[in-house]
Image (cartoon, rainbow, N blue to C red):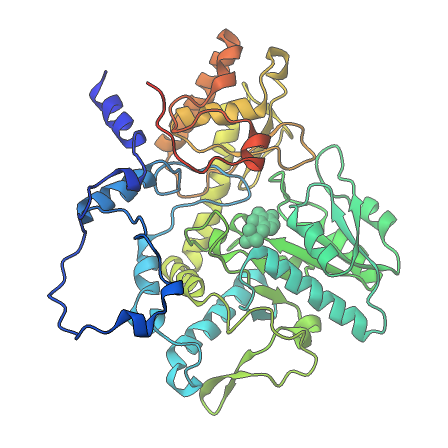
Amino acid sequence: MREDTKRKRGVLDEPLIFERGSTGRVGYSLPEDDIPARDLERDLPGELRRETLAEFPEVSEGEVLRHFTRLSQWNFSAATTLYPLGSCTMKYNPVINEVVARLPGFAQLHPLMPDEYTQGALTLLADLERCLAEISGMDAISLQPAAGAQGELTGMKLIRAHHQAQGHPRKKVLIPGSAHGTNPASAALCGYAVVEVPTSPAGMLEAATVAKHVDADVAALMVTNPNTLGLFEREITQITEVLHTHGALVYMDGANLNALMGVAKPGHMGADVIQFNLHKTFSTPHGGGGPGAGPVGVKKILEPYLPIPRLVRAAEQYAWSDAFPHSIGRVRSFYGNFGILVRAYAYILALGSDGLTHATRMAVLNANYLRKRLEQTYHLAHDEPCMHECVFSDRSFTQAGVKTLDIAKRLLDYGFYAPTIYFPLVVSGALMIEPTETESKETMDEFADALLTIAKEIEDTPSALKDAPLTTPVSRLDETRAARHPVLRWRKPSA
Ligand SMILES: *Cc1c(COP(=O)(O)O)cnc(C)c1O
C-alpha cells in the first residue's frame, strides 16, 4: 500500500471517541479542590441522582484533538477543495474576516448595551447599510433578516404591507419555473398563491409572457437575475415595467449578486426589493444551515414598512428607533446576525469598489472557462455565455445508463465536492457548476480534468460508476432509506 493511501486509511479508520482512551484517563489538570465538601444528600435528593456514572469518554487532550481533527477531514469544505455548488457560492472566505469578527469589542458586545456605549458597532452597521444601498442601487436597507430565505419572507411582507395600505393585499405572486425553491415557499408563507410563469426555450423570462399573466390580483413577480441557469435576464427592464404598469411590484432574489456587484445594480433594473445573501457574496463560511445574514434593500415606496428597530441618527449619535408606525415589526431578535455583518463589512472594505467589480468579473470568467473546457463532453443546458455559473445535464450519458447522481458521487473519489444536482428543475439531470472567483486556473483545470476522466470512465465501464464513491467513509447509500432510517452509529468497515 502506498504511504499516502495508508495515511488516508488511518484518517478514515477513526473509531468513536468512546472507543478510544482508557478508564481514569483525563484531558485536563486542575489544582487540588479547596472548596469544603457539602452533603450531597441535602443538595440533591436521591431520586434525582444517577445510580451509575455517565459513560463519558476518558481520553487525553491529544486524543480529543486528533479525533476531531480526523473527523474534520471526512468533510468537504471550501477550506479543503474546490466546492462548485451552484447557487450556493462556496468561495474562499478570507481568514482576516474571522479575525475582525472576533475582536473583543465586536464579539463580546452585549445586544442590550445602551446605544451610547455601542456607537462603534452602530457606525459599522450604518456604514454597511450605505455600502449595500450603493452596491444594489436601492434606497434603504434592513440588516435584520438572518438568512436569504428570511430576507425573501421579509421582502414579501413589505410588498403585502404596501398593497394592504392601498386597500387590497392582492392574491397572486408570479414566479418563473427556474426559481430557487425558497421563492415560492416565501410567497406562500406570506399568504399568496404562486403562479408559475414559463421560461422561453432559451431559458429566459420574456416580457410578453409575463404580461399575459399580470392582472389586478398580482402582487408581485419574484425573479432571480441572473437566473438559476446562470443567464442574465435580458428583458428585465421591460419585465419590471410590465409589473409596475399594473401596480404590482418586483422582488428580485439577490442571492446571485456576486454576478452583478460593481457592474450592474438591481435598483436600476426596476427591482423594488431584494435580499442580499451576505454569507454567499460577501464571504462567510456557510453551509449545513448557517450561519447567514439576508438583509433586504428597498426602494422608497417600501421604506415605511421596513422591520423595526431601525438605525437612526440624531444629535451626532446613532440610535435604535421603534418610531415607524407602518413597520411590519421585528423579524428577528435584536439587530441581525451581527458577526456575519462584521465579516461582510470587512470584506467590502478590504476589496473596495474596484475589488468588488474585479471579483464579479473573475466569477463570470471562471464559470465561462469551465463551460468552454467541458462543453464538448458534457451537454450544456443552454449553449451561450453564462454569468457566474453554468448548467450542464446528463443527456450525453443517459444512453450508457449513467445519471447525474452517478457523476456527482464519482467526483468525490477525485477529491472534489459535487456541483449542485437536479436543480434548476427546468433542466432534466442538471449539474450546476459555480467555481466562484477565488479558484485558480490550475484548480479549475484539475476539476475539469476529473470530470473529463469520469466521462471517459462512462465510455469504458459505465457500470463501475454505480458504486461510487469508493474512497469515502461510507460509499453509495440508498438515499431514501438513509434519510428515513439513518444509522447514526459508526461501524468499523469490514476489512
Ligand atoms: C441560497 C439561495 C437562497 C436562500 O438563501 P439562504 O440563505 O440559504 O436562506 C435563495 N435564492 C437563491 C437563488 C439562492 O441561491
